[in-house]
Length: 368
Image (cartoon, rainbow, N blue to C red; front, side, top):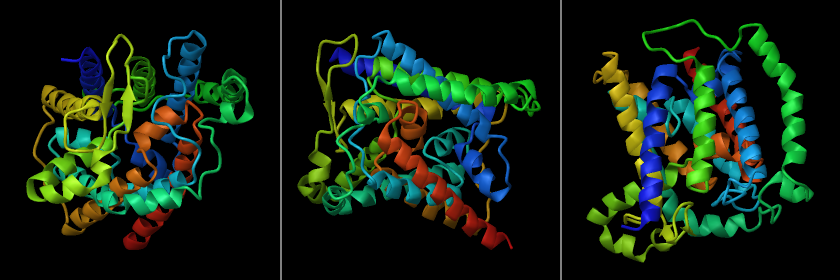
């Protein structure tokens, strides 16, 4: 076996196990972080996301300055394009309606949530639906490109440290105030509860090690297309054979500690994308399952109103579709792209915030 595939697969499984366990025990829900801002005017959970982004930014900058990152900026982060705003907008609406992001539904599925599983399936179908409009979307994107550069430092022709350290110093007093006032400490909820600020620290190091070992942040949703393509190939093999999107090779590189090239795309084959992302998906499911079993909280839970299942299916489909329009999900962009000051990740977050606001308006109107 190509040692490059082995390296990224092992990393993906380990990273997924950690993420699944920690997200479940910390109840680290990115939907709640953003949704609660608009629905309940609560900033409790979003503080931990700020902590994570700032710490990730500092860790990645130190690693870059020390020459520890083989690929900087990370692989698969393209030139600045406003299509990421549109993708983030649709993603945000779907995220609120479904109550899940691309990792939230995975760790919830691992703990026995049937709603979580339905969300995963809906996201796969949503991502697969994008394949049908991909040629048109790629043509349209050409008119929305705003720069050939990938990151803010590249656009300003400065070293990344000239932006990272001022941002850190600007936010440091706020972080210190939260710490001093106890706003980063939540009341213990259940046995084995992990404080969200600790989860934020863990995920910052996951991002750092992902960029070190794989050359990019953790990603998931390209593999949702791949999973969908495997099922589509069983029923519509001719369509898969003639669809260009399934045959594109999006990734072709040599991982760290390897001398062999690995490559992959969204098509129905075991390749670099499967090694990078399917391993993480399996790890998250398994990590959450083992964590839930350990504290006696694993149980199949399917009882929910029919309307909630409807919202999960619609919202999950929008999340999957939006993640391909962007392209990328909240984990790829917020955990990795924003700390790297990538344009498309900043565009995605802008669209995500607007989409979350719109989705919250829809939910509030149904609650009245």
